[in-house]
Length: 154
Image 1 (cartoon, rainbow, N blue to C red):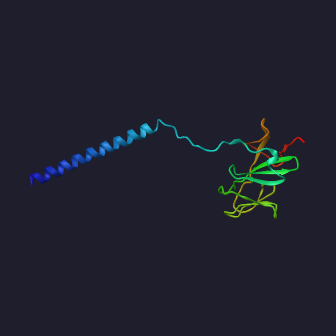
Image 2: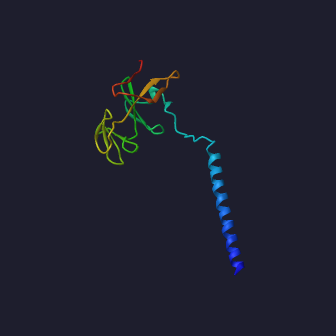
Image 3: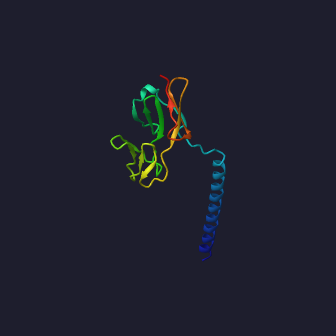
């Protein structure tokens, strides 16, 4: 009988030491992990795309940047292709002259203003300028109104 009580006591003692060491190890690991920063590897908010001659008259989608380049004659604008509802990529419908979101049916007119669907905000327009190398420079940090456009020299 004494042997069973002793072995039970040994088990509980060893088990409590194991839990204590595991807890201390967890806190130590968390403290060490805290020393390394959490870095988000997101795409840059300002970037160069092709030159003005790469974008014909009308609306051109740049898939890797999720933007649309809108060109009317010598004027160029850039608008986000990300729906303001939950981030789906909108599509340009040239027949209807509007952007349409395939996920939940948000519809934006040619100025990017929401006219239907669950999205609450319009599509943002980005500042676009001509870089020194002749390519278009898009700055997504600088939102501009719809009527802000880049005039190309002829």
